[in-house]
Image (cartoon, rainbow, N blue to C red; front, side):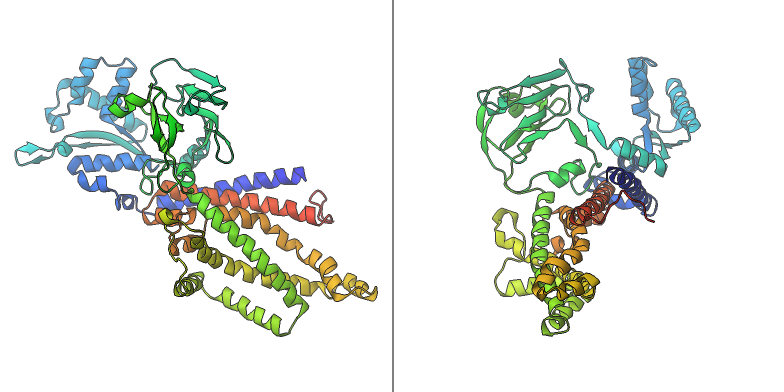
Amino acid sequence: MAKYILKRTLHGIISVIIVTGIVMLLVYSMMSRDQIFAGDPLYTKVSTNRKITYKYEMWEQYGYLDYVNYTDWLTELEKNGEIDPEDRKKAVSLGKTPEVDTELVAKYVRQFTEYYKSKGYEVTRLNTVTMGKKTSNGGQAQLFAAKDRPLILRLVDYFKNMFTVDGIHSVEDYEGDRGIEFTLHDPVYGGDTFAPAIMGKGTKHRYLLYFDNEFPFIHQNLLNLNLGLSYSVNRGIDITTTMMKKQGSWVQREVTYPTGLTEMSADNLHSAMYAAGSMETGMNAQRFTDNYTNVLLYRDGMSRMGYSFLIGILATILSYLIGIPIAIWMAQKKDKLVDQIGSVYVVFITAMPSLAYIFIVKAIGNAIGLPTTFVMDKFTWLMLLLPVISLALRPIGSMMRWLRRFMVDQQNADYVKFARSGGLSEGEIFRKHIFKNAVIPIVHDIPGAILFSLVGALITERVYVVPGVGGLLITAIEKYDNGVIIGVTLFYAVLSVVSVILGDVMMSLVDPRINFNSKAR
């Protein structure tokens, strides 16, 4: 079994890489890169030359190309000691046109151009744009180099940087002593409560390991999953945080800040991240002793993944509780009224588009007074009823269809005839023999049903305005947020691989005759 799981895992990893590569190809090669600015408010505010350089900067962040600005290049030369600070200041000032460049500027422009052209970059110079007798900030001369990134390089970098370890050198511009601190009494709780924690200096996160009263009670920021950054759906926030960060209204609780100030606040100090220069502002100076001031807030709602999982797992449980008994009943009453009614439902739910019956359920719910829109600030459990029912309808039909078919097929097997000849009743035969064998293929789908409840339902969440992961993907496609599209797709692909492997393992546990170690003969 271990050898089989390892083999399937390796095949799954290859499949995930291929799927991610295909999505990257579609996103970066077959969609106009100008579309990513459709909902960008900053793009509409900048003008002339600055608009062009802004486009290239964003294209680099989205992974389309490698981009180097002439000014940044000079700064790097200064850091490496290849140009003194005074010459750098003079070399930055490009002339309105190349003809009026100073000798020093012309020297470094020529060096910049030759160096990056030799590396395959396309070098572009934008001359000063004047508006009447004035030159706007966006119209100043610009020089930059850009080169499209090959798909294979994007793919390699994406997986290479997927997991990062937060160490004491993660923050380059950190000022002060770097190191790791272990305490048995977390300062967040006032320093008197027994609460072990590991904190870092020079790390991206202040807390690397800590305990709290929220499941799973022990949390870590040491190993981080990077699925990319969101640039429009949740601008500047990584996709993992976007899916797992809690939503809803702020929840205040007593918080003890590093300065010793204790007050009611929604700040989650365990999420503190480094932000250079942030302690210099008035409010932060009263609370913090260093630049670990960028914190998330305590909220009363669940994360996107939390809402998707809650609705999905309830729908999964409902589909099994309803689908399995009805399927058994249909198989026992084959070709009778119950079986015919069940078959009509199976045909109806299979043939009808999901969007159609979701709206039918919503209309019926509205008519009897059930909430049809998810309102986070006024959450009640009744808000989950219609989404759960809508999600469960099709799986119930699928369960009825396949389990009935498997059980009917088993009725004519030799072991069933032998059981009848032995004097067993039809009920005993169904419960002890037919159902046990017919349910094996159904068991294979249980891990997949549970895991895929994490990813949400695209249409259902959209119709009922559920703030889950499914709606996140649709919003990302509408806003051309490439990072979210690729990150969520990767998440879906990994869950698919894991569900197949777990399904095979469960089948072997339920039926000992299934042995993945032996070869077919």
